[in-house]
Length: 73
Image (cartoon, rainbow, N blue to C red; front, side, top):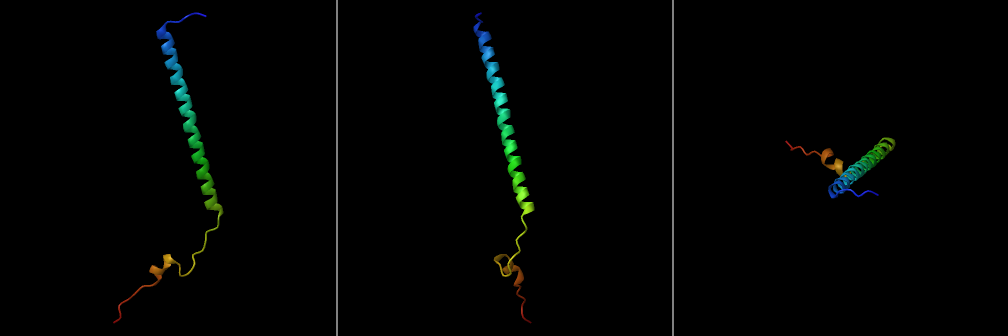
């Protein structure tokens, strides 16, 4: 096997690290994107397929709106 100069081995090592970093980072980001899209799709599907719940009369959110006080004249 031929021996290469130190600067050739150094540049080869730097190139390999750069390529591995770019490929690994791209795979990591792609995996995160796929996971996010999948989870948002499931959440949307659950939201669309679940029937909306009816509000119960006298609930806490309606108490302030239904009771209006008017000054007596």
